[in-house]
Image (cartoon, rainbow, N blue to C red; front, side, top):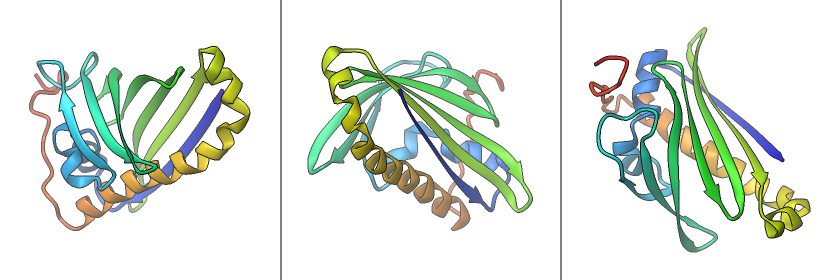
Length: 161
């Protein structure tokens, strides 16, 4: 099992950061590493929401399907993905800090298939790539917020309905 933890401090309220960091519909417009996002479930964003996210990784287009498994507005959400024979769980957290808030992404991955388990010792090679990718995503959204970019509200949040 592997783990990653990446954080950025954002000069914004936790509510402003939440609105941007949980806005799937506009993520591809704000994050350089995402080519496109296709939300494949209907209804408000929350537990059960599924989407396909397409990125260019190592010069190849790759699409992963993800699902929100936990959703606590203005606090955190968890996402699960099954990729390359491994289970991935990511938790995005927004916490108050002195100068605004801290946004943290915790990722845990566990190999399931024989091939994924066989490749585990080489996983440290991918850890650096993944950490750089996650940090880039967090930094792109931080720049958007701090530059005064549009902040969508989740009027369709289950908690605000």
